[in-house]
Length: 440
Image 1 (cartoon, rainbow, N blue to C red):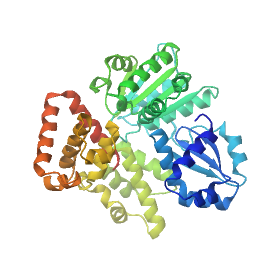
Image 2: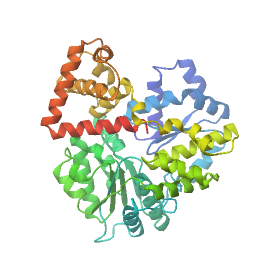
Image 3: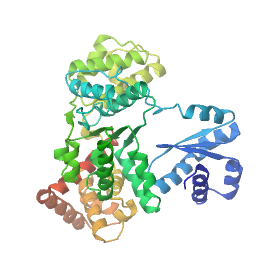
Image 4: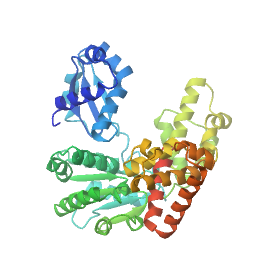
C-alpha cells in the first residue's frame, strides 16, 4: 500500500461491503487517488457532478474504509474538473493547511501564559539551539492554547527556514499509525524515517503514549535520534512528566531534560483581551458590557471563549438583532450552565474505554471473558455509574442485560484497584480526559 493508486484499490474493496457494484462503477469508475497526507485523503474525479455527488453521499464510506485500514480518522477532499492541476502545483508549498491563523501574532499573552509564550517564541527563533530549550514541554489543561503555540512555532520556523522539514502530529495519530504498520507487517523503516528525518518535531497530547509499550519504544528511539542530531523537539500534555505514572522512566527523564513549563487558565484581563481579539478578527464590534459579561461567565478555557464568540456571531447573522447583554444571554445560555448538566452517554464512555484499550465496543458490551476485555468492561461500568444518571439496573441493560449485582461488583473492583494502584488511577484520569474532550 505504498502508492495512492494501491491504497485506492484497497479502499474500493472495503467499500464493496456497503455499496453496490453499480454504485461503485457509476461514481468511482474514473476516480483517482491523488495523495494520502497526514490526516487527509485526496481524491480526483474529472466530473464536477460526480465530485458533488461523492462529497454529499459517499465520503463517509471512504472515511470508514480509511479508518479500517489505518485505525485513524481522516478527512476526505474530492477534486473536480480543473482542480487537480491547482492542487498539484500548490501541494508542495502548502504547509499545515487550516492552521494559518494560529501564529504568535494572534496569540493573546497574559499573566497565565506569558512564560510559555516566551519559551515558544525563543524556540521558534532558534530551533535546536545548543543549550536552548530542547525539548520544550508545555503542559496544562485542555483549551488553554498549547496547540496554538505548537502551530505558531511551526509557522515562524517555516517562515524563517522554508527548507526545514517540520512535522506536527497528535500522539494518538502516532500510536494509530504505528499499530497500522505493525498489524499490516509494513516496513518499519518507512515509519521511522518519517519521524526521525525532520528538523522540528512537534507532538500534541504526548500523555496518550503512556502505558503503550510499542509506542513508547518507538518514541524513545525517535527522541534520541532527533536530540543527538540537534533537532528541535516540542511536546504538549495535560500534565507534567513527573505525573505521568505509566510513562517509562527513561522517557520521563528525557521529557524533563529541557524546559517543562505550564499554562494556566486565563485571568479576567486575559479573557477580555482574547474576546476582543477574536471578535475583531470576525468583524464584530461588541459593546463593552457584552465583552465584560462573557469574560465574567466563560472562565474555563480559550476554546470555550472562541465557541461563544462564534455562536454570538451566528445568532446575530441569523436573527439580525443588535448584540446586547440580553441577546448574549439568550445566545449562549447553555454555555453558562453547570458542567454537570452535560452528561456523556453510555455509548460514548464505552467507545472511549474501547479506544484506550484498543477493544471493540461490542466486545466490551458482550460476553467475552478474557482478562483484558473483562477489565475494560468493569472500567466502563464504573465510568458510566460515575458520569451519568443511569441506575445499576440500567447500566446492566447496556451490557446485554447483566444483573445489577454484577455491575456493583465491577464498580467496587475498580474503586479498590484505584486505591491500591496509582497506575490504575492514572488510567481512569486519562479516560476521563478523553470523554470530557468530546464535550468541549
